[in-house]
Length: 119
Image (cartoon, rainbow, N blue to C red; front, side, top):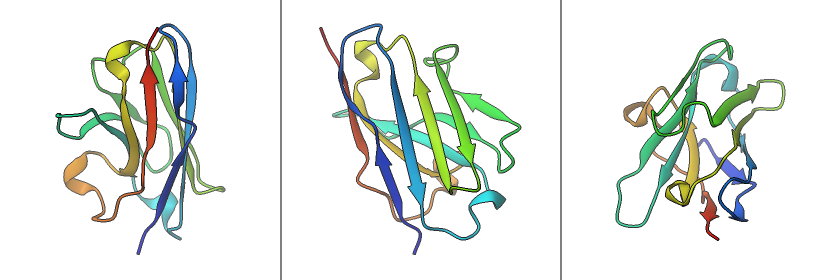
């Protein structure tokens, strides 16, 4: 069973930055796309950013384009999300899982990491 361990969240003020990390247990990490998703209270889980298996292609939700950057290190079985210019509406629990979208995600999810943007 694939496991995901997300970390790096926290409480920040608007305009500040955070870097999230997600470590996985799968042996075939580099063979499939990965993605970051987020879920705010009362909302459905949504795609934030995706990255191809090689890391050469990325895609972003319109709401985070130009502010967030997804990257991966296949040697470390880890995917990252650099979040700059954070806004209150970015407040959510952030999860990683297989991409390119939630339809392809594995059934098991990690505990996520809470990101709170507030002044």
